[in-house]
Image (cartoon, rainbow, N blue to C red; front, side):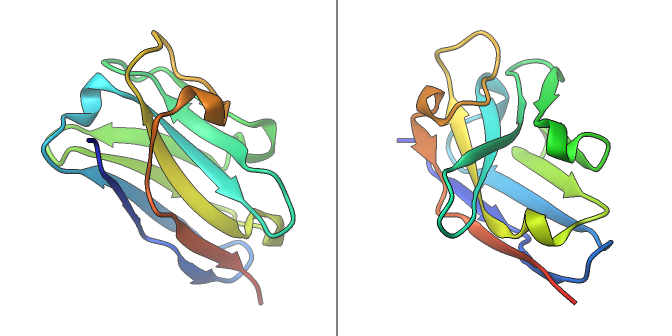
Length: 125
């Protein structure tokens, strides 16, 4: 079974940057649609960004457009989420997830079968 491991979370001041990583072993992530999701306390899980398999086609939720960038490094079998100009409302646990069935990636969590354990992002002064 595909296992995903997120890293790169932490505490950052408003306006700062973080880069989250989503890595896998034994499976080639380029064959999968990869989504980044986040969940804040008391809120539903929200799709933040996704990148379609075998391509660089990407989607973003409106609230992060122009600030976040999703990308793949196939040599490292890793998907990144570069987060710039962070705001307090970006505070959440961030999860990456993988889907091999759909042609294009989706922003809905029900499309994804494999999930990482999450990494905490806290934006606060």
